[in-house]
Image (cartoon, rainbow, N blue to C red):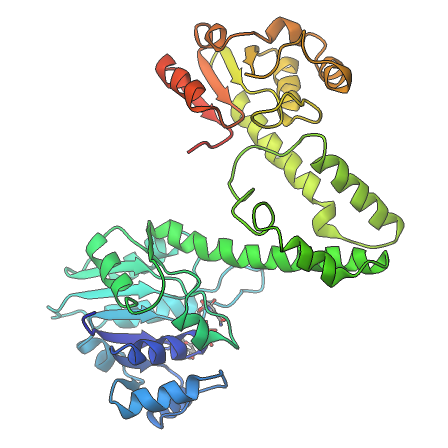
Length: 419
Ligand SMILES: NC(=O)c1ccc[n+]([C@@H]2O[C@H](COP(=O)([O-])OP(=O)(O)OC[C@H]3O[C@@H](n4cnc5c(N)ncnc54)[C@H](O)[C@@H]3O)[C@@H](O)[C@H]2O)c1
């Protein structure tokens, strides 16, 4: 790794740790803050706040001459290869993200560009909403030759920030200038992590997705914990056992945006859980709103299909997911009900469903929901592809089915988001 000259803007929790840890990797780092106290603390080789291990790293990197601090943007930028923006992005009163610090630091950096010939990469490490870099940062920096912009969100946690930096859970760099993206990823080369190189907005969104996911996980564990406790069931044991399943529970399973969920278990069991919680006077808003969230997702799909100005719709997939003929609570059935109600002309095909071979509750559910399903359900995919003007894919098809769909040349609305 080639050591770089890095200016870190903002010496708060993220900036101080980032500056000190990058210096400990061998880079020459200068930290910048408007707050003289933080600048003076770094100059005195002390951490500006308590964070385990930070004092020692600052002490050693300052002593090695790799970490300095200043309140002057001009001084910090003069020799920098990379400027890392780590200023605060607090909430505004209405919940919107406050960008005052970002706008100001971008202005201050841009003001140093006159006469600059040395290339500079400006990397956004603060958490900013998708689009902020394109809409606020890039226009704010102006169109100066040699200046590139990337997103490099931070994932550390206060209290374990130094460890999180040195053993990263994730390294994300986003941007359009691939050389700049690779350069910034290269700053972290000694660390045990594979960088994820993505587009600018993707990088910005990943940070929000991560934090929302953490918040959802904590609330989920607390709601299950509260219900378990009320039922006299050991909550810790329930959740620690849940985490033992690394195939379905703590894994990438179910974490792919796709079609709404359905089937004979998830809706039924969520209803039973939340009904019982209500009877126990327990408010579990996350679990209680999960079916509503699913319903909203289904309605988005219905609107997307309604918006297709195509006379003949071919629906591929009728069961609630691939490789089953279980139709109970299949969201596709609800989708078809809406389409039939609106008088849309359609044919439906599912590799595992023949009206004459399904029976019992499965058949009853389907015939109750769509009495005339027999008129639209066909036995061969070719009966759909040779007739339809647009296909609607509701489940992940087999490779063979996908080939036939592609060979048909028909436009596809992919509700299962197979790619
Ligand atoms: N704190 C965390 O655990 C954490 C983790 C990951 C990401 N983030 C994100 O990182 C960003 C920074 O968070 P933080 O907790 O370090 O914030 P912070 O408020 O602790 O620090 C921000 C620092 O920026 C300085 N600053 C503001 N404008 C400046 C300017 N023009 N020039 C120089 N310095 C300036 C402030 O004086 C302050 O010291 C936020 O977007 C936050 O959401 C925070």
